[in-house]
Length: 82
Image (cartoon, rainbow, N blue to C red; front, side, top):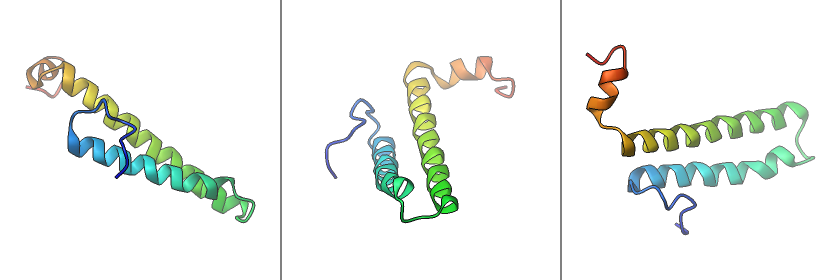
């Protein structure tokens, strides 16, 4: 694998998963922009890109919270934590 776009993430497994998802998005972009595909197909490619982008954002938010807060901190504010 090439150098990570997310080298700031120290969790190797999480970083690898995010990098793979990002690479998948990069692969899909030309299909979404291509004039070869009809409107419906291009829309499906865009939807997939949006879903994968959201998963990267979710993973980075998880990482940020995991780095700054303990399970105990989270359980104090979570309504279902106790």
